[in-house]
Image (tube, rainbow over all chains, first blue to last red; front, side, top):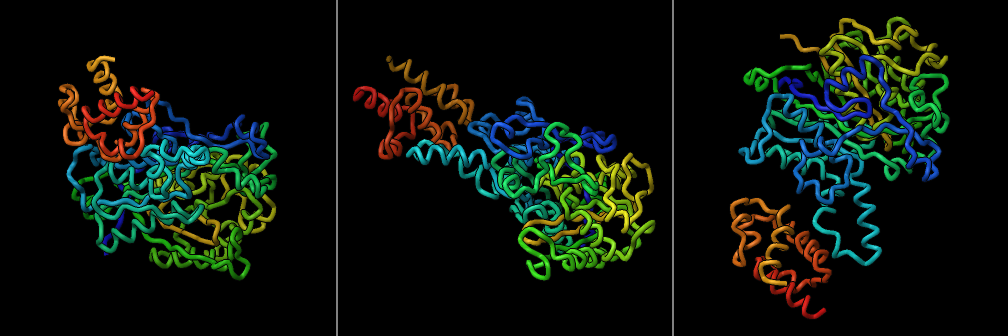
Amino acid sequence: MNRVVITGLGVVAPNGVGLDAFLKAIKNGTSGITFHQQLADLNFSCCIGGIPQISEEKKLEYLTPLQLRGFNSSGILYGCIAGIDAWKDAGLSVEADSELDVDSGTIFGTGTSGVEKFREAIYKLDDKQVKRLGSTVVVQTMASGISAFLGGILGLGNQVTTNSSACTTGTEAILMGYERIKNGQAKRMLVGSCSDDGPYIWGGFDAMRVMTYKHNDSPEKGSRPMSESASGFVPGAGAGALVLESLESALERNATIYAEVLGGNINSGGQRDGGTMTAPNAEAVQRCIKDAITNANISANDIDTINGHLTATSKDGLEIENWTKALHRKGDDFPYINSLKSMVGHCLAASGSIESVATILQLKEQFVFPNINCEDVHPEILELISKEKIITKSLKTDLNIAAKASFGFGDVNGCVIFKKYKK
Amino acid sequence: MTKDQLIAKLKTIVQPYIQDEDAFNNLSEETDFINDLKINSANLVDVILDVEDEFDIRIENDDMEKMISVRAAMDVVNEKLAAK
């Protein structure tokens, strides 16, 4: 069995595009949430969201003018930027005419692809203009559009696929790529996930009344995981990407190693025993965390910090309870815990990968990023863990092991364990 | 429209899709879209759409299949313009 390490990172987040900007933002607790007039014009209850800022010049650094003709898929754009950045960060080359790399593949997830492009196509179709769609609709709206783009840009000859498991997608992609390298089927896997921005991807959530409508005048205060005044999540978008590599290959190449993937677990609550399409089966969540710990061959006491799912809905308290039960740790004995969503909102399918990038940066830089908007921790949560574990200012501290979990619609769970790499 | 004007217009239309600069610079009536200009076959439909827009004509499936070279494209465009 191969050991698996992380040798490259890339990120497109509402509060920072590119590793340097993102690291600075999460250290400072910078919010990427802003008001969007388009949402207000469309009568959304929640008119705030997190959208990464990408200039036209920046797009041309990643996609050719031909690829950008008729291009209207923000998720694929974010995924390509994060993926290419991660690949370069790992010291690997990006050449249009490179040799086919049979040892490298990608598992790059998404929830739905090119929803704006799809809308554009539907208008044309209904106007009986099917012949006028051109060649770009399929590749931008097929779920695997993002892995298809990245596979071609990087010349990947191993598995090239897209996974989809709602808000667990990003975390699941990491674990799927990890397994493939561990089992010796690939040397390198570019793993990650992306999500479109905008009303057509967020509308369904607004209709479910799970997004906050109380902060249209105070966008940066809107995303409040673990807070007593949390009133629903704030939608976000972007992409996160990791280059996973066998330790052997990383050492051979003398690559920078950010951290090691020790293991993890993916499961489902089967929408039984309290679990539904939209609510978690608590026992399954706890089992997912416990099995991740077993799989990583560590003890629950080894975990120094947790990056939770913690969306800022009424379920945050239940998530904390699940962690305390799964780890048998509470009060002062509980690890540090944070939620990136306080700064970037809930990036949906992209959340697991963006948040994993943040978690890995914490291990590399030895700090815990702050929970912003959590000055009023929910009393339910304070009955379970002490306030000192929910830091609100960036904290320099020694970290060895971090756990990252994501939970998604369909009652699906994922938990991955990262460890600081020591030679 | 003279032959040279038509070729010049077609040259501008295909430019975004070509993958062989030399063949593009030497573009003539004899130039083949796929074999010479190395246009991705999936992009041929986009070339057709751009030709439709430029000349304000509609090109049906039968004509579309023929349009794989500069000469064939010129024939189809001239025919459609004459029928207008």
